[in-house]
Image (cartoon, rainbow, N blue to C red; front, side):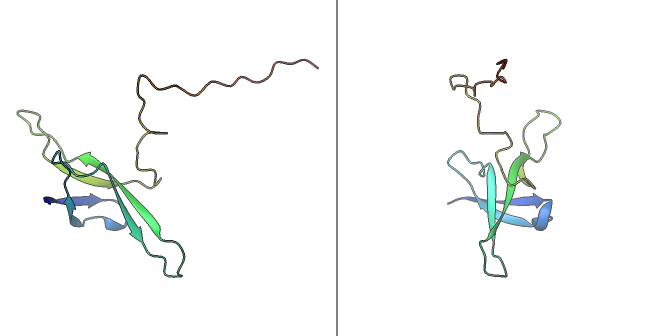
Length: 101
């Protein structure tokens, strides 16, 4: 498998560079989850990092690589509830009952 040294920014992993496995497209995963064991023996905490572009070249506007930024919310997806596909149903808007009584 191919790996790429990827920097981490923010959170407990700030300033570290780790080798991350690349997918079939040559990109690292969109989210990187790091389980941290609890010293008291409870369930492990999970640190979530999101993949962002490291920057763009001046001439052609090409991506210069990827880095991971800490996501303190721990959701990792960036959006609320996942992707918004054009063919998926939206949640119905609930109106308060207008009953008189």
